[in-house]
Image (cartoon, rainbow, N blue to C red; front, side, top):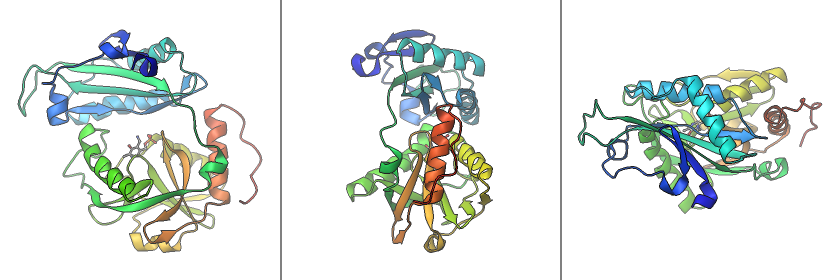
Length: 295
Ligand code: PMP
């Protein structure tokens, strides 16, 4: 365990992973009063670290608690633990939760804990491997109405729906699931946002009941720089028949094409390839290359 996870930052100290433990009566475990982040380290630096730290603080606020660290202290603690573990290409997982003092729905006075773990996690897939595209199942579970849950929070509780959807998809041979929202409109994958390409336009659902991903915003900027027109709007599932390319964006998947969603199919092509290349150049802090040729 310590070999894989090294050391973890826990409530102000860096400890061996195997001793970063918590109590079984933790409120965060019983009532999902927990928020987290997922971040990537490229060449020793966390990509968009401050945006992630800000989102963690905002996620906590939406669940009614305050992190024990400020955003800049959180940035600093994250850099310290990445450094302590000598991570060059890796993943960072900060998590904050209500502690174990009061066991009940109400836990106003429970201590807020914070941990930051990280581990080695290279980008496994070459652009060529990514261009094969993922196969997604359409989940029966839907993203909830923002009046039902704080959907802009990266809250642990909201991931119950994602795990149910992903497990179902995997057990039926798919790589991931597309979730619709409570209105029946296209929302997102279980840990990533979704985009569709039609000619020079790139359509993506408005993030009004799911995370407006940091990678999503990055991909939008990169696409605009290449002259594509971004259209944020409501997309109904039947419309998926009319798009040429489709891709997911997220810290874990980066930019990854999709070739199938339920009965709809897509052909990963020039737009996906261009964005994969531009994203890679950005995170590796290399200049963007010439426009890539059609796939
Ligand atoms: N939606 C969900 C459900 C996610 O878990 C993630 C990953 N954090 C995203 C979208 C994409 O967000 P980001 O690009 O900030 O990783």
